[in-house]
Image (cartoon, rainbow, N blue to C red):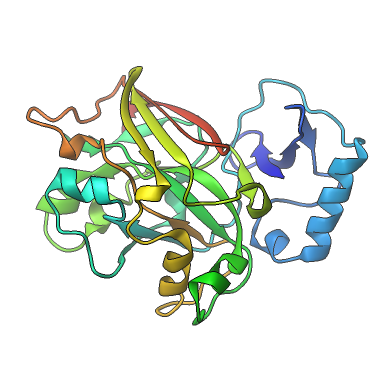
Length: 284
């Protein structure tokens, strides 16, 4: 299923994109798309039955698409998780996953405005596969078992401010948690529709120019291993999200002068089968 949330910011309602591409209203079936729903097999069964019935009312065109997941618990991010991205930035591939966090309040809709922070000169783009947790993961024993804790997948844009992240001391968090720095969606695609999370193409364009053209096959730590590994250090709950890293092609890895983002730029990104985003940048 392709689950999403539509409507004005803070007042989104649950919806479903059917096989014909028609947007269907789920508000008569469930209250919202959140961790509680993803952990409730009976509720998900009702959604599937309603989708298959063909009786869900269609929604009008032109509605804003919000983030596909409400009440996100935490966003765990994996840094330097693509071989090609490590090469382009001159970094040694990590021997264990690099973990940092983004606050849930960085999440906006897939077509919402992204704000360039005040004083920023190094705002960068990163297309990423987001993993949405649907079953509590605590000390998961194997990578094989880890995928059983995944509810679905989505497109994430891990917007980053590289000066804040790298040059201002401390951890990466200052460059990762600026307002609007995690567009998510358009859909939460349930795990049964993604045959192999290690065989997905990722692309990103800036002002119509292709900048990133990668595949999750390049991940140093595959999705299943990431979920298993993270669960050794923290409990993952339904409604938590893991951003699994970005392929080569970010501004940081380009020759000088590096083409960092500015107000007025347009970024578009997509992951095979998971939908497409488009953001215009404005000054904060």
